[in-house]
Image 1 (cartoon, helix red, strand yellow):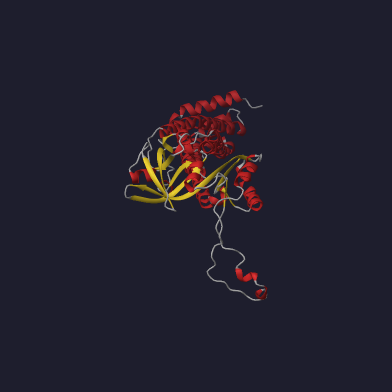
Image 2 (cartoon, rainbow, N blue to C red):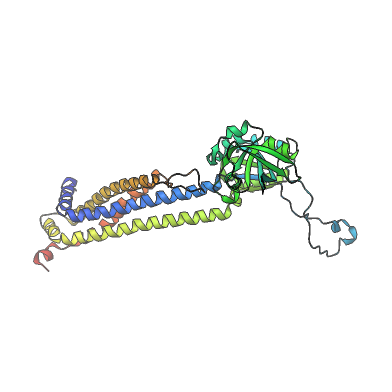
Amino acid sequence: MINWKVILGIAKTHLVTKMKSTITASLGVTFGIGAYITLVSFMTGLNKMLDDLVLNQTPHIHLYNEIEPSEDQPIALYEEFEEAWNVVHSIKPKQSQKKIHNALPILKYLKDDDQVKGATPQLRAQIFYLSGSIELGGNLVGVDILEEVRMSNIQDYIVEGTPEALKNNDNGILLGAGLADKTSLNVGDRIQISTVKGDIFPLKIVGIYQSGIADIDNVQSFANLKTVQRILGEAESHITDINVKLNDIEAAGPMSKRLERQFNVKAIDINEANAQFETGSNIRNLITYSVSITLLIVAGFGIYNILNMLIYEKMKDIAILKATGFSGTDVQLIFMSQAMIIGAIGGVFGLLVGYILSRLIDNVAFETEALPTISTYPIEYNTMYYIIGISFALLSTFIAGYLPSRKAKRIDPVKIIRGT
């Protein structure tokens, strides 16, 4: 029967008498786990921030009409050419409207679908921004702003003004930050816009929108859906885009294909729209976890080396223990206990160090015009990282203690006492 009280007592004595080696081994675990927690928290926080920057501005499914060439050309309508081999060059796109046919019934259908969290209509118009002698081409997007706020994080990118200010002003506009800089305009000023037909309308700037993507902020602004319909002289049913948010993002792919067939519109799901970005995100995550695991493995080797040296230093103690009646298994358990104690102490302090360093990074100022809503470096506080950290600390010290302790178990005390 194993007497754990005696075994743990001897293990504690060994650790205390060799305090320098104990502290060194514990610090190896502490800084290995601390570095892992800090790195994985910072890198995943950074990746999440970059993902949100793009994905939060992308609907799960985007419905629109795509202008494309006609599959059937006029020559195919003549019966006498049915058996001929026709070669048609410079095929022109078919005449079609950008608006979605029966947009309002489609919106109602989507909102009644249990899979759909919400669906928002949009009207995109090509316009010119006029400010004195400055004339800038761009887009004006008509939206139901409060519905957009409910379905996305658009309010996080409104750096000046509020969504309610746009909702309550029929002639209001959320001006892109790049456009505001180029035209030297601020909230409360007026800007004139011109349609492609030459009609000019004055709009009051009720807010500044900054997505963090310069190509968007330099050309795009938002206004109420009815305002853009009035500017274009179109009816309330005139809608060019429908953005759909689902309860389960995994259903976006199959549902987009179904909607495309059902309503004869172009439907792009979020994975298809961001395929290249998704690839880059996966590679960043792979690098993050690879480096983190490497840190933990390096820490494990350090623990193994220290415990291995500790056993060689304790050869005489092992011989005495065996000579006084301790079995090889008892000796092995003594050194295994030392390893697990070092792992537990070093692991706990490693979690503490990792958390403190994460908090310090989280409070370091990080300001950039591209990310107006970010004021400090991003950190992802995930309990799973801490569970993985302490689990690896215990596992690595168990393995690092088990291999040397097997040698201690097989040591012949007579040879040690004789000095052979």
